[in-house]
Length: 226
Image 1: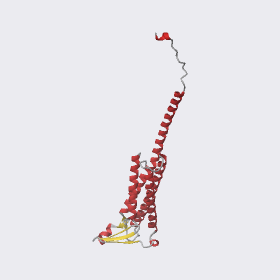
Image 2: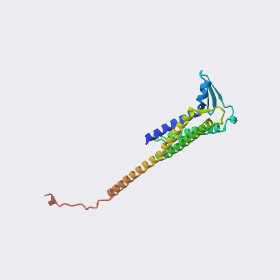
Image 3: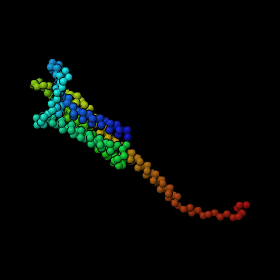
């Protein structure tokens, strides 16, 4: 049981790290390789900055100066990724408290409830990250395959794949955390049944020992020893 919780926490922790890396990355979309070969320049954009580089290795990044000029889908992706990171952080705190190897959290039943809460936080975090990356990718692909779109076309960046991988890890780890409460409840039921049988046997033994022996004492005559 403890090993399963540790594996789930590792999955969720790696997923949270991937979500943070994807949020801070500037490679959500990159210019198409077909145009990059001709111009020898690369343009890649993220949620917070627009960057450009050339074949000589020089890069220049410019942040989004105002939130009102940022497109709506980018703002939605920002909010979803920030929510994913916050939910993952609280899920990590609850997961540490709910694990059986820690000294805090109370009884096993309380720890199981806290672990289930951590699992729900991680599942929501993964869903937020998955939704954000999918929304951004849908916008890129719709512009890329639209023949009437004449502006610069982009391809999927590395941050999207990192975000998808992190979301999958968070969801898997959160499901394992939620299933751990069922394992704890089953073990608690088995322990209660065993303690009940022991208490019944002990009570019967006490009653048997408490009954006085009413057998009359035997008196032997002196001739019985001859």
